Image (cartoon, rainbow, N blue to C red; front, side, top):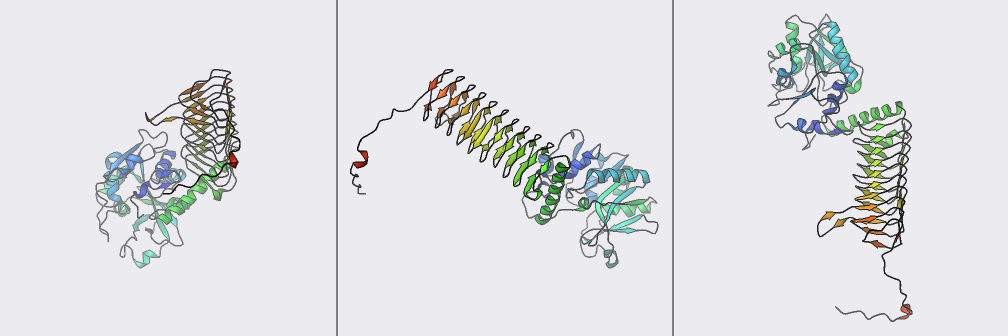
Length: 453
């Protein structure tokens, strides 16, 4: 990957690569999921666990990278002695829960010691080839990582090992002890368990899979981009089949854990990330970005950026609005053109139409903040931020600045151009500005001479 980030932690649609097979295994009904990692424990420290994996997900340490069989041996004490164990590669993120479930069921029905998930490829370059016996059972897998691992005749075989193998747990643990590194890389390959099982008279079956995504591995940035594109297409198709409208899938980005309700519409050039949720009948975009944002029903977010914001039912946002973490827009509120809101609660029906900054404020219901309303929330001397509290049905005129901490009562008003530094009682008009005076003949005065440097 040519990266300081471990390969399995590169993100695909909002999840680290390793999280994809973990989530698939969970959805398939795995009773226990064991992730084998290196001594640095990078995966354990940041792996996205999803929901319901407490007590299911475990980690095992492989002290040195000595091959896939050695990795499975590192998890031997967590495998247990009965049932089906499925071994998968962490860099194959698009393996599906259906594939995992079907493979486990097929092995148990067959009674085989192992079942290899295989596929037929016109160009099998880079994959291990499946070598079958006369009885149709798998005899072994010929690896192709280095010259000499497979013969020329074996390289002509088009049936490949996808890297997903289901085992009887007892049979797997016994066979692992006999694996030797007799290959060009001197590694302990997991497929070398297969001839060991066959030598003991046990059957090794093959289950062919049709899901092309399950066999897509990632070893460089180009492959990462290709898999991400396929994952994104699947995510968008899932939302569309569930009743959401994605106007232009090619111009839309939606992370794996985003939730979109039926009848919501995502317009082109919009990006939805993290724990974002969009309610029924809402419209996002065009050109909007939501990160960990919660959007209610029948809301609109047009050409805007929202990070960690709660946008209620029938709320209007944008265009060109910026909602920062801690923003709450309650039902029917509005954040209009070139409005920035941070860590503030905007009451139901209150409008902040344009050209305003609202930070660290609590604003009541059915109010209207005129253009260029500012809450001056930061005290540079104490280096603290203070809150502004504005009551219900307050109307501020244009160019009003509230110097926090300050409180404005219900039904109050402000005059245009005011800098409010004191509380305004309910129903009062607050004006804080110098009286206008006109200087006659000012335009006729001679220009003052320039000062020499």
